[in-house]
Each structure stands twice: as structure tokens, then as C-alpha cells.
Length: 64
Length: 485
Image 1 (cartoon, one colour):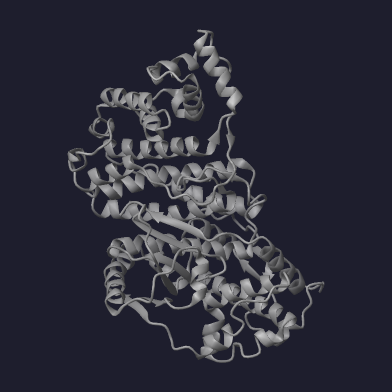
Image 2 (image 1 turned 60 degrees about the vertical axis):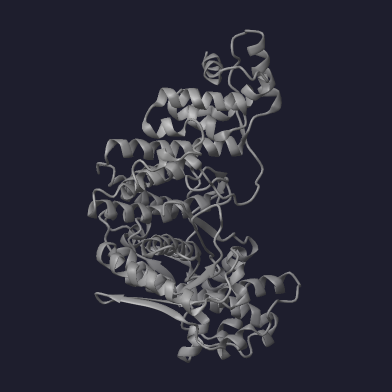
């Protein structure tokens, strides 16, 4: 995955979103958005995104 | 529980449009988590809406969880619940689990397979913003399959990176109705990861281009879910591929999609150096992508992560600058970009009436031209489909040399422009402006053929002040020369 422009020893990019792909709905539903955990932070970010919906990205093919 | 993490090398490769299978897997995991989080919030508000819904325990349930229609449903349902409204389609999850599998089109070549499910029945599919087509007939489905069968070997053999991105990131096609003003139309939504809304492709190459383009949007949507790339995502500005002002996040989307298309056309041109369309598309988008990336990096709208991402994007495009394109085609490509920017300025930048009046009054009194005013961005009018008669003619002339200049109905000036007779073209464009000072294509044609710096930099000011003079015999070239002092 090296593209030739890697910054030597650059730290990895860590998302505010945690990996919950292995969790069940029941487990996740118990977490409140006010929760101070990493999951609570991720939830608040998700809900903030929901409050500012973005339009679909449309493309037009003019070349063919 | 750990945060989604990408190495700097992987993040830079993503920015350069060269993502890999492990990164695709990470992005897919993040999107599955997004759907789970959305459904969990719905469950806290109204458990009955997800009581019959999926979990991750069976393949069938996992398929519904990663389904882009589930993402659309969960997003709109949660938004409705939080706003105190009754959600639409409350029985969606149970119904989706009971539905028959969708029809698919598929192709395999040299160990790489693309399988695309056809979503042509769910009412949710209209939420991608384009008008959905009716359920495909068997004949229509066969056409889609034939296009994929033609496209896939070309993608795998010559555009392997993009083919891997398509195979890893796209799973659904939502057929939509065509738009009469453009040849092909397509869309993606951040709420429908893995899906692309697409009008019927004319042939395999059209489908290949559309899939390369839309896969990039899906990748970027997934990246933006994980990382904030913009400090001010809503700041509007110029985008080389749209007629309307776009928010910063939309400009990045266009730049990222066209990065992959530039690479596509570069490879096609290198494969067949007599392919004039490929040479033109490569030259045009190479400059547009590099310019747009540079503007983003200079604008201050990007976060640290955004600057790293776009920096890698710009470096990728800059690496293609040394490639040579036949000079006549390079000229047409550069002028197509300038033409687009000028049309955008005429359409979207407004000159204050008082400023235009002051310039026209000075002209009438044979006074020196006042200082040039600034034009401001007009208020948004929503998505605008861009159409250029000149660009159509250029494409036609590239596909079949000589064909465009045979057009009997060609607007004045265009034949001379295509033939490279710029003096004759300028005379014709000036005549068109005298007849109709609101003819945007005549103004841009005059700018292209005269290379007057004032026309190429501030065409909207010249046009607005010229209209204000209300002198139908006035030569716009003389007026522009007076304005320039």
C-alpha cells in the first residue's frame, strides 16, 4: 500500500469512529450518546453528521 | 473495541486513488458499523422498528445489514424519529429479509470478479436523487450484462487498480432514467454505501467509465465517514465538472472521481495513441484535477487529514504532467477547461447593477475606465446540468475528424473555431454578442479566440457592463480593450 510518497515513520491516521462491526444491536443499543467512552464519542459524531445531511453526488458523462 | 485506523502509507494511497483490498475491507467494516450504530439508535427510540430486523449471525442477515437500502432506510428513519415524525416504511427490515434475492450481472476475468445486484424495485432507491427506471425487462438486463461483459476484461487488463476498487466497493446498481441534456447520468449517496444510480450505458466503455467514477465516490464517502477532511465543508466555489457552485466537500468528490478518470484515459491513450478522445479527456482532466487539488490545498478549507489526502491526490496528478499529448488536442483540452470556467463565471457570478451602470456611463462619456469591480457569487439554484454546444462539437470532431465542421446548423463562429481560424471565429462571436449580449457561449468563444486577458479573467464584468451600454452596434472587443485601459 506504499504509494511512494509515504512520510517515514508517520503516525497512523486514527478515526474518531470505533470498529463496532462485531457487536450486536442489543449491545450497541445499551450505549447512551452521553457515554464518555470512545463509543459515545463515535455516536455523537454520527448523530452530528445526521443533523447536516449531504446531497447525493451526481455525475454526468459527457465524453461518451 | 479499537478505532478504525489506516497507516499513513494506506491513507496516502487512498488519496492517490490507489486503494487496496485490505483498505477496502476496513472501509466496508466501518460502513457495517455505521449501519449497526444507526439501527441501535432506532432501537432505543422505537424497538419495534428493528425487532424483526437483522443481526450479524447469519449470512442472510449480514447481507441485509450491509445492504445500501438498509443504510438509506436507517438514515431517514432515524432522522424522522429524532424530528418527532412517523418514519416511512416501518416494516422495511422484516420485509427486506423476506424478499427474494435481486437479479445480478456479473463478470470474471483473470481471477477478479464483479458482481452487481440490480435494485430496480425498492421505493427507497429514489433517494439517490435521480428518477429510478422501472423494473428492467429481461432484454434490458441482458444489455447491462453485455456491457459489463465487455467492460470487465478491459478494466482488469488495463485498469487493474480501478477494477479491484469496483470489485471491493461496489455491489449494487440502481438503474435510473436518462436525462435528455446529457449522455449519461449517475449518482452516489453517502447513505447508500456500495450502490450507484446509473442510466443505461451505451456500451461497455461507457459502463467502465461510470463504474470507475462512481467507485471513487463510494471510497471517498467511506473515508469521510471516518475522517473529517474539511474545516469548512460547505464553503462554495468553482468545480471544473459542474455548472453550479459546489461546496468544498463536493469539489473534493469531483476531483477525486476525475483523478481516477484521468488515469483511465491516460492508460487508454497509451494503449492506443490514435485515440483522440482518450488523449483529449486525459489532457483536460489532468489539468483540471491538478488545478482543483492545488486550489483546495491553498484555500485553507482542509483539515490536517484533508491536506494529507489531497496532497497525495495532487502528487498523483502532477506525476502525469510530463506525458505528451498532440498539441492540437492539448490546445482543445486547455480551452475546454477555460471555456467551462468562463461559462461558470457568467452563470454564477453577479455584478452589482450600480457597478455595471458606472462602467457603462464612463464609456458613454468617453472617460477612462473606472477600476474593475468585484463580482459576487449568486445564491444557489440547485443542481444544474451543464451543456456546451462547443464541447459537443469538439467531441464529435475528435471521434470522427471533419464530421463536426459538416454540421449545417452549427452556430456562427464554431466552425471557424474548430478549424483553428481564430480571427474569423472572433468576428463571428462578436457579431453574435451584438445580436444577443446574453449569449454566454458567444462571450466564452470570444474569450477563447482573442485571448484577451480581461475576457479570460473577468468575462462576467465585461459582459454585464457591455449589456448596460445598450449599444447594439458596439464591438465587444473594442469595449473590452477600453475596459482594460
